Length: 197
Image (tube, rainbow, N blue to C red; front, side, top):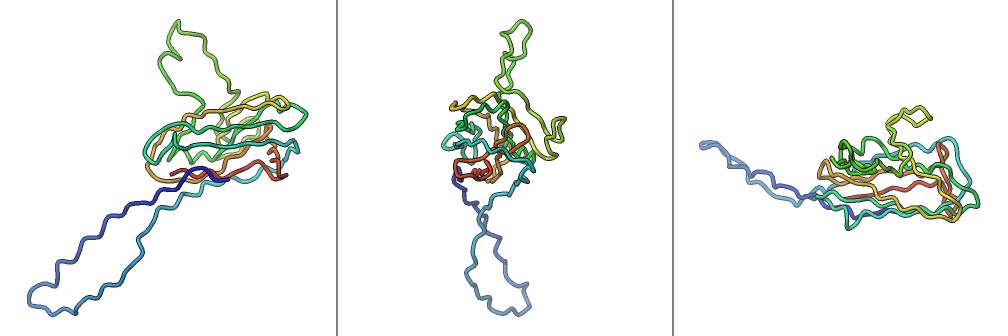
């Protein structure tokens, strides 16, 4: 499933020739139409984990219209546990290199969150790790943990998506139980390619 629409890149026409210098002969130039380049997303892929988890989940990712080609917004991931056992720690994983285009985080930093005498610090997420991590998180990946996810329960995760560069991207997003990739309703590994303008 692909989320979002890839935006076409606008191109600037190349400057035209000012002609041959005076006193020299030049052949008449013929013009042939050429295709204008379009923006293609940068492929940010993940290797599938070696361990799998047979517990089935359903999930969806929504980034539009919140997240457009020029603005920051939210990437919303909804996951339902279809199995009869709890997933103790649901983990979202994406390539760390994504942060050069869009920086995903579980919260928006603010002074209220860290001020002296402020409200108690409450966080729903259990870990936020750039690999390699102490629990086997691979290098060049970012892992964000949530949990537990009880049988039949649904969690909606709203990630803050701060635009760093104005260009399209496509990246792999994996859903794991710890370090084992979960299984979709169709029986495939719980991974999808998310495409954003």
